[in-house]
Image 1 (cartoon, helix red, strand yellow):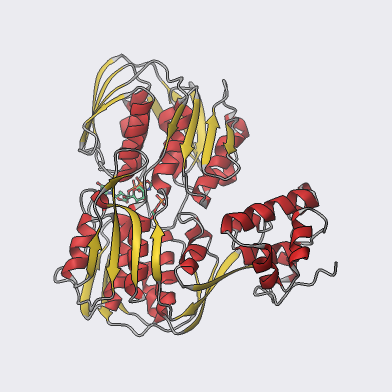
Image 2 (tube, protein in one colour):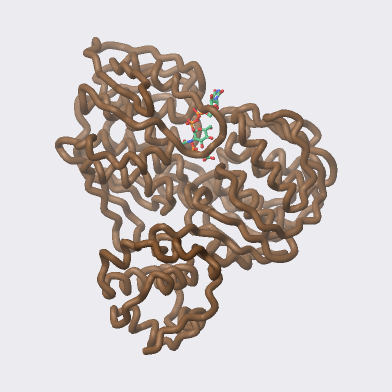
Length: 531
Ligand SMILES: CC(=O)N[C@H]1[C@@H](OP(=O)(O)OP(=O)(O)OC[C@H]2O[C@@H](n3ccc(=O)[nH]c3=O)[C@H](O)[C@@H]2O)O[C@H](CO)[C@@H](O)[C@@H]1O
Ligand SMILES: C=C(OP(=O)(O)O)C(=O)O
């Protein structure tokens, strides 16, 4: 067969990048690659003919590729990955970008996926379990991939089910921390949540400094202070936390967190889970990911009282050796992102499976700004505990919020949902003050919305004024190194006339599964390309 592909949307990439080696090509046979392509096509629900059409091929050519009858070079694989919009197919070394054509009107319904933040906590918690941990419906996102790379590198057996709906984790008798994939660990802050489980497994260990988005300094002091009560002493040396575990007395531990942080609460919960005795955590975060972790710990036999409140009482166990199944609940931040997509494109759209308990303040503020929406009856998430609703958003004339919009630890407006209010404020008539007291650098990244036409003014690193309404215009942009501001740019660019190119979207893939393609199903016109 003559395998010539249609026009390459990533054409013009540097020769060096083109020449990069791909493990797909070097370590997989044509049959292996073909199978990956077939799986990705089927997951997209595409026929051979549809894929062939997009690639300027015949359906029989696509069938031949899928059965391994054609050997593909790197460019061809990257092109197929673009058509199938599947980052996992893209040759290693290629960077993913988006080309967004607007303005778009969205329509229909979309399901919210499970949360990044619960997923990473549960992956770390699987280290507590000598039995088999099966997590259902874990989002296929880069943050999860990084933690899985770290877990596999230290000996945990990680298996996705063929349709990727289940993830099985089995811890070995002895973890091999010396073999840790340090590069993967340094790309995520969540690695800090290894401290709680590992203090039960090893008398001494080292972990690389936590990385992640560039949002300014994020303290780890509350983690180190709280875990000292479980005998964990940590020295920070160049780039590493050196941890040693002391013997401590059993009994009741009272821990008052100096910050109501999510991951610090989770670290203490994981430390308390294998501590025979009672731990009382005050000023605990009652946020969604913490609740999911509590439900998981209950499922493996740990008693947790006060779930959803700021005082958690944990009665730990000597050992956890349970075959457990658990489904983390839907992501309130993704739900807010999708509501924002509807608002900015002035669309009528239903966001299904939204965890309402974690969106109430956001919706109340949106209602005050003039947004019209309907809520369905509540129904339970797969975890049986979280309350979900379907939210139908109607095109509405918005006005600026009367007061400044600022986040608070749950049950306040979610800190990660704040950036979306910058996009919404840009749609609304009038001036809105957005106050991100939490992160030093996040409001700064929102200034990028100005490149798409928004009127923004930074009063100081934490306070941003946005004046709407906005006539969005297309632009060439590079993602800022911050997940939510990057998604804000993607959403706003759907409303912009013309073609916006958003470069290097790893940061978006860190927290959202297949966002471009899912928005396309609602009517967006977003092309994925690599170089
Ligand atoms: C993997 C995960 O779950 N990540 C979430 C988690 O990160 P994580 O729990 O790591 O959040 P941090 O501990 O970094 O806290 C975020 C910032 O808020 C400040 N702070 C926090 C609580 C408080 O009571 N007072 C206070 O000042 C911290 O000093 C820090 O600057 O919580 C953040 C805040 O909700 C979210 O943005 C992250 O998405
Ligand atoms: C800041 C975020 O996450 P992380 O803690 O993973 O950096 C986020 O989810 O917006």
